[in-house]
Image (tube, rainbow, N blue to C red; front, side):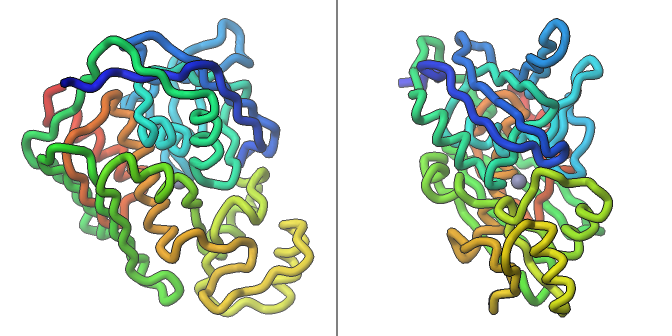
Length: 304
Ligand SMILES: [Zn+2]
């Protein structure tokens, strides 16, 4: 029996600080009819313009996946989209009153919780899939990135990361079935290396991100003075480096949480294809740019 499309039973709101602006952003998931797909709506702008969750609308992938349609942008879409695919939601309108989604804890957890609380409802229309019937390969040799899609009877994903640093060696994560997403992946938070974080802070590129929104890997010696400055910046009484080479801002949910988060990002970015996938994805060192280029290749090579 074919599976049915799904939407929400009622609206669900998630509120929190935006990573880039530091302002409170309210995001409301609204139930939507069959074959509606996933669309964002900027309720703070005249005429409440719609931005389709479509890979052709990606305009920037530097620190998240940014969409733009008719000159209207939304930032940091990937963790919201991952939550929707992770819960098998096909049709939904995502209302936003800022140009970015709330970063929350840097994972999909809060979105998943809100969606589950509102409840998911089956619709009458059959779900249509993107069936990977031949191999699709994206390779970026210079950056040692590769993404591959191969035929399989259901959506499953393998991710390997390796940044050739001592503190974060090779890690693997595997999603065997999308129903593992909620418990095994949705809580996995984003991560940064300390030098990247300092660059972002010094250049005023992040405001809403306090120490609870990312796992911070420290891949070099850090002076006490620097740690004191960080604790001030993060408004945290004492910042120190734990033996695993991460800051004591949070406890890891899983030992391979970074690889799991990269897998979550792959799910989020591939949601921009507009339909659920049937096939296996194998990814090495994936990032938003490569995820989006890979999605475009799938769109070009696979008929759906
Ligand atoms: Zn992410």
